[in-house]
Image (cartoon, rainbow, N blue to C red; front, side):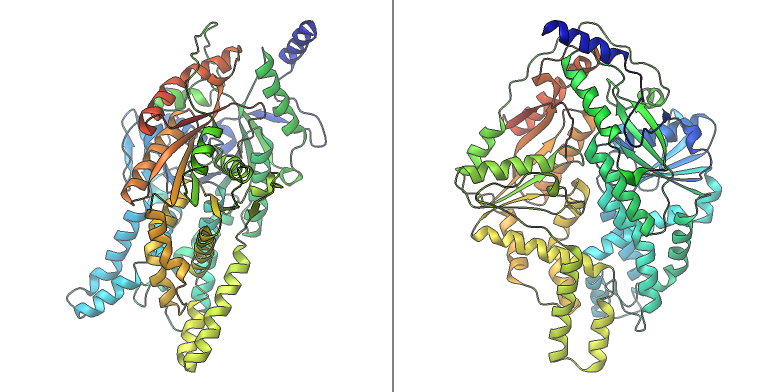
Length: 600
């Protein structure tokens, strides 16, 4: 058997990079910035954890080093560009000291919302009575304002003539797919709403001046659809789930009139020298052989797996150059002392907590951990309901046939229709024609969908009276916005004529009660996911929501890999595992790396 295994390893060593077989047999060249040359505006999108930020930042640095003036903007509410560039990034834009042609800009939705509110209210201070000013401020206190304020910044970078003149290239590092699709559909959604609006009202207030944005939104729609100016780059890993999500994104973007030009498959293992790396290479080839049909016709590129974390200018400059990593032949890897997922499930089963969230950066495996926790609790005799707040909803990828386990999906279209019907039925009973028309028009706002989905989320959490509710959340930024907005949603629902259900009123007290709610933070043993998880924990502390357990997924240091690339990555995990164990006070679960790398 050992001889056969040795032969197998030798065969794997001989496999050439990028060779694929099967129906599509895609040809994949090495990725570099020449592929992006035609486009002034560049968007990088894909499932969380595929390396969008690394690829987009490395491309921006390469263009800047080539003499171009480059602006890179993060539209991710949980941006980690400060980690990648190892410096604080401002909303106004930060020039990178050792890369003088590059300006980096973060869009902080909460700060943008505050500035947006003041921009709307400021001109009326001292002119309108105090109670009128207070009324406008109240109208602008909802989650819609946060969304539209962040979107305004995005639209500004995409359409402003001065920005277009100052920079040769404008790069957008986007949030994980679901949030990005929402952002990219907003120009059309708000343009349609403004076109059809006859009363001048919106959930953003009578004096919000949204009508003035009509031209900006129309220009944003035109720029996004212009294939001569805008390059849409899908990023994936050589793993089936990320390729499937890239295909779904392409289809949904196509429905919005936005064309994707290329796919970058990031993190390709180039050779195998032991059983673990051989299994990884097999899984990689299998995923590429069965490339989703929805990706056919795209230009395809590959980028190799790296042994290092892509932080700092030196590593960013090396990332897209195609140079082989300098690997040591012998590296000591110390096995970490961590707990198992069963330890966590045992503790939860005996704790009496009824609402359990899994939270973290996109691509760290929140869904798979939520599924394992839900199944584990069901096997221990609990009645369990599993659901997700992620618009991308990956629960369908798992076998959920477990006694005692129920699954809820939030159907956004269904929830929107149900909410609109309920509000209009109530309005018909209590309002005259003029007020009814006002409510009818208000419901056409793109924000209504957010309210309807939030209410569905509150209804599911309320089931904790009878079941243990396990909630797989969207990637960090989207989840934080959801929690930040919890207090303001009842005000929004009242302003659109909707009744505020008991489930919404009870939601925040339940989330703040550590006897009822547990947040499990999920991460990978790498720099960026750990930094983001640490910020998530700090944000949860500020909002008064308790978190204790951390789950570290895909730990190579819990295995026996001898391949130099995998051992280098395993050795680098130690500092992050130690850091996590300090923060969790020993409540750290480690999950061994699995061959497919299918972190869903």
